[in-house]
Length: 194
Image (cartoon, rainbow, N blue to C red; front, side, top):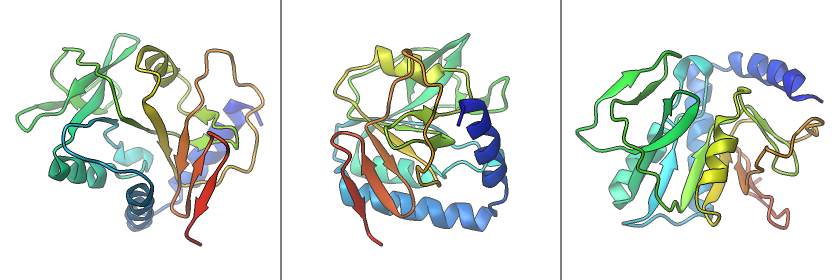
């Protein structure tokens, strides 16, 4: 399928989830993350702030855990057509951008060497090709950060269709976590609890 067809399909499917279902699946995704990745004090973790109206995975669960563990938390902010990383601090003030998305008020790019980059998505195929909202912000961001950062997509859907029109500027994910399993695109290892 093309990215545009995939976008239409999975946006429609995601709209059908209730808030209760989103929370339950988000907790399962978080549980899968805990089973497969270790977080400790001083690590640098980049994570998106969920857009509730888009029925995205609830990342506040992750953020609370990262704070407890003493990890350094970074979140995305849009400056023009560029996605930058801003450290999320207790005193940080969040504002809505022109897309209605919460982001830090700070405009200081604190891009660090990341251990994990937890990424929003609509869909990922069996090769790690990510389909987002179509602006390419994360592909550009991935190309600018340290190469050993683990790029982890979190989503609700099993990869069962190929992305036909990925381009050379698209950057594949390293892992996908769904409510039912974690899939590694490094050697295509699948770990499932079911």
